[in-house]
Length: 510
Image (tube, rainbow, N blue to C red; front, side, top):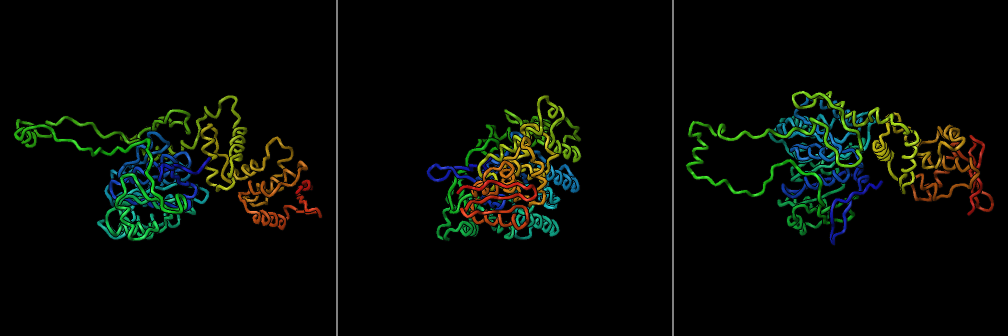
């Protein structure tokens, strides 16, 4: 499964990609004046990576709730819950790796900041075993991490700024990759902006913002005016997840749209001045409100019901019907709903002819066969594994990340349940560090079959390295730990003994 997504087109029509796995480690800053296409860029990024990684969106304007119409997102209306309920929801979101949109458009600015701060802090404080990788997208980040004091109280500002600082400065070790978008860099707190290593800079006009954007992109000050001339939807990208040199990119199309009102030009109604006066002042015995036809109420929040899924096989089962309170799901109901995304209905589990253990082994073998799979982090691999299992409707909670790492090491080494004595091999390697288990199992399997010792390239494939030096240090570490004995004969042929099992590989012909 590739970690690259196409974000748009570069010079000459070539595609420009973002490496999501690299983005998880290096974070992203997006800047552009209103109307430059920031929301379109974020939507493209979210849509293209929806099946690859958990996504958590802090949405102050309600622009991204439509993601639930086509993808597997839960919409949480921040105005419908108390602070304690928001924290509980965030904890369940982290535990079950649900993709969510926290919609704050029904709150005033101070309440938005407080709600977002409680939500981000609860994500940050999750237990260590729940530190799964997730993209945390914060739109209009200058509202939640202001550079200077504004109209909100100092307490709320400190609370919100502290949560945003934790996200950008310390979130990486907890699997949280911050993506912040702002209209003006000058309005965003510097300690938040400074932690991003990737940048997408859109059209901006003020000199101070152009100068800061040019500095971040490594451009000379005299070339900063290029940023002013960018068209809507065009950005300059730079960073380890995008490009080592600034590259112009035109953001590609999206599949979902915002529920915002269209601002297309429309002429006023044809009406005489007298008629307009009568309408405004309620002449004729009716007020303007009474004369106007009743408008339909606002559309139901996506969180009130299960979002329709796109055609084709569903990655997760639909929600069962659940009671609602005043048109909005209560916190307990929404918590159960989030948990339901991580579970498979009993009827799907009980389908005849489906052997869950065999299918899990097939999924692991399929992943192990992909090139460079060992070069990816265990957390990313585990999320990929969980997604593939949900697509096959396999229940996976019994296989936690520690068990997954051992089972995946077996798959990398080519050990299957049909191999006699594989339990003894696992028992012999019970003290081997998890990151070294796959190469150890590969050597033990070769010794069990009296096959030649694996070559350095094969050991590097399962260990996740292309460095001969690291392979030498790997063998030295395992030998010093008493897990293997390396023997090289006078002809330079290497063989490896597994002392716990009393077996050895055949010499490797060079």
